[in-house]
Image (cartoon, rainbow, N blue to C red):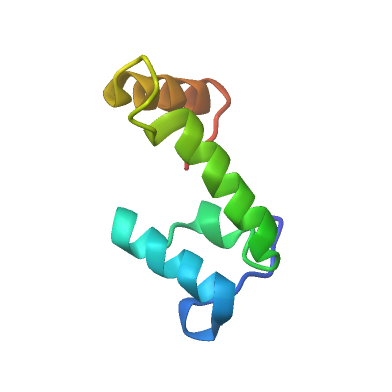
Length: 82
């Protein structure tokens, strides 16, 4: 099994600590998919911006529930269990 070093909540500082705090406010916790990019907060932040722009933005024409349904189905089709 692969192992990727990550930064725990209590070790996060500066920009990463702010990103983790935003994740907790948004989702109630910091999920593993977020932690995977914790060694480079600039990549993590860019990834979160892409996710929010394509999935959670209220400006998109499709309702959020439908966009999230598509994301779940794509993950399922790819055997991705996030």
